[in-house]
Structures are given as C-alpha cells and as structure tokens.
Length: 138
Ligand code: HEM
Image 1 (cartoon, rainbow, N blue to C red):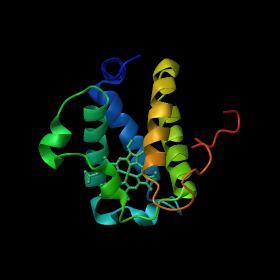
Image 2 (image 1 turned 180 degrees about the vertical axis):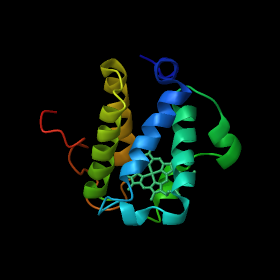
Image 3 (image 1 turned 45 degrees about the vertical axis):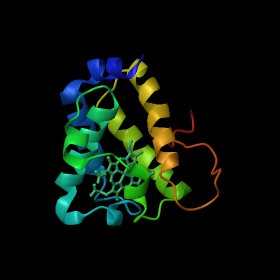
C-alpha cells in the first residue's frame, strides 16, 4: 500500500480520530505527559494531525502553516531515549486499537511510526534495539 492509499483508507476523519485518541492518553502518562505543553495540547494535537495528513498522502496544510517539518530539530528540546520512543509507540498502538484501524493499514502505519520515532531519539545508543509497540506478541 502506498501513502496515497493510506490516506484513502484513513481519510481526514480517520486521522483526526487517531490523533485525538493518542492525545487523550498523553496528559495521564507519567513519562510523556510532562513533556507536552499542558496549555496547548489542542495545538499539539492539531500539529500531529496536519503532519500525518501531509506525510501520508493527504494535503499540504502542515507545510503551508509550519514550513519544512524539520521534525528531528523540533524534537531536540525534549529528551527522547529508548524509553520515550517506546512509550510514544505504545500509546499510538493503543490509539490505533481504540480506533480499530484496519489491519492492512496498521501494517503500514506501524513501521512508519517506528522509523520516525527512532529517528527522533537524541539520547542513548545510536542503535537502541528495535522500536517496540509494547506488544509482547509482536
Ligand atoms: C519518539 C517519541 C516522541 C516524543 C517523546 C515526542 C514528543 C513531542 C513533543 C513534546 C512535541 C511538542 C508538542 C507540540 O507543541 O507540538 C512534539 C511535536 C511534534 N511531534 Fe513528536 N514526539 C515523538 C515522536 C514523534 C513521531 C513518531 C512523530 C510523527 C510520526 C511526531 C510528530 C510530531 C509533530 C508533527 C510535532 C509538531 C512539530 C511542529 O510543527 O512544531 N513525533 N513531539
């Protein structure tokens, strides 16, 4: 499945629901909760939503509003090691479960999220083990 096909399957509404389910879990998370701006969680939610629409075959609202993503640079202010990476992926995995993302779409999204999340790491070994969605069954 290519990226335009992910967009076709998820649609605007699908990405909105996924990102909402992700951010609903953030404030209560002991590790990631404190990293996100408590007064602007809605803004953070909107930025991730627009980025996914842009990156996964949708439209250009993200770069129109934010310019080049420069995602690694934009994550530099936060300490992101293996634990933070895997917690992000775990929460996204829970959000995909809640939204009942179709298995064939999830099979495309998981490696995408895992690769980007590992690229965001700015702490720890350059090879930090396989990014994990926290599911012991794989
Ligand atoms: C690896 C663990 C990660 C952590 C701990 C993390 C944490 C954060 C934090 C604290 C912010 C600032 C919130 C805001 O005000 O926008 C942020 C922004 C953002 N993150 Fe992450 N993130 C992670 C992985 C990812 C991944 C995997 C993606 C994409 C698939 C992503 C996409 C974004 C985007 C698009 C923004 C907004 C950038 C901007 O336009 O300013 N992040 N992240």
